[in-house]
Length: 159
Picture (tube, one colour):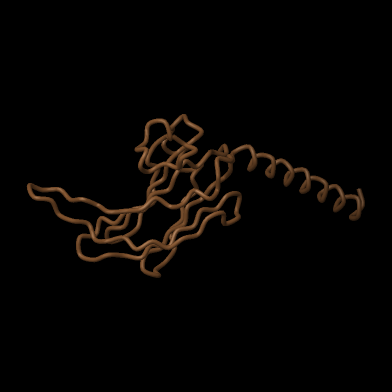
């Protein structure tokens, strides 16, 4: 085999391997879900905070808002009352690969993929609720399914 034939056959093998990897990556993508609501809460008892929130569907911003949320209040007898807000549900009931991005007081953005949260939780539902809470840092978590979640944290189309 001459050099040109050898190099040509190697290129075909690389293309074939690349095509297989591409298919495998798509196969592992989480299933699209319906996002039934995004709530924001402050667990900080010291001061109020400004939350910037974005909802992305398939990489496009479908909601952006800012919310002032007052400080949490310590309750007599222990515990505390966290205050919050439900973001406007401008994205509708369409399925998609949603992500939720939140930053507090102009700090760094935190972002979570909703289908990945669902996959990690092993929740078997196509409509879910997400909550972002701030205490000394921000965490974004799956609150539950639209059927089982708090209706005060859900969009109208999800209840």
